[in-house]
Length: 275
Image (cartoon, rainbow, N blue to C red; front, side, top):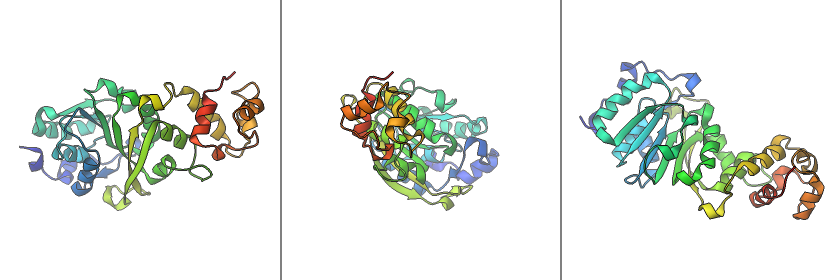
């Protein structure tokens, strides 16, 4: 049996008792037209390694294989899904490897040869921590095509002086070029979530265009956006010995608030000596 001849996903879910579990943040996307659209957005797939997080019954996994992925490494934490994925693995031969593990503990560089592409319908409950982890490991990743709650993509692409602009906006935009691709309505999922989902493509910038260590930027943005309405002179008091002098020294107003600063402003701040 090849991948195209496998039974419909609904039959696979019923056979293996794969009802979506809230604790895993699961919402299954069963429409092959939609999963193949996501897979096509991640092309080229015929080189290196495609890393999928939370494949569940294997809907997106099937699409990736059908769209020509040379090698898919699927990371799944739910042991109930392993039997369903084993059937898909048998149909796809050596093109699919399934690893039972927590994606938050996996180093992408360990999962196969470059170029590595992460393609995933991310579990809602860990999507942001996963993304921040991957931003820290961007040297190992060629690009990412990821599905989030729409509100997360709104934050990823947000500009200064808007309500969605925040710490995640700054970190992601500094590390990656980000493009919103398309939305997927709640009705397309089983069970339907209460929100619309969005697919975005994030392509890491060349290493010489981003900080080698994101820790100072994470520290500064966490402090600055921790209390959004606080002036920077107060919000950054725990980081800089003299925040007023530091801000004025780089041409920023001590009375400004975090949402007024550009990504470039935050990079400049992150490069300043701290306490």
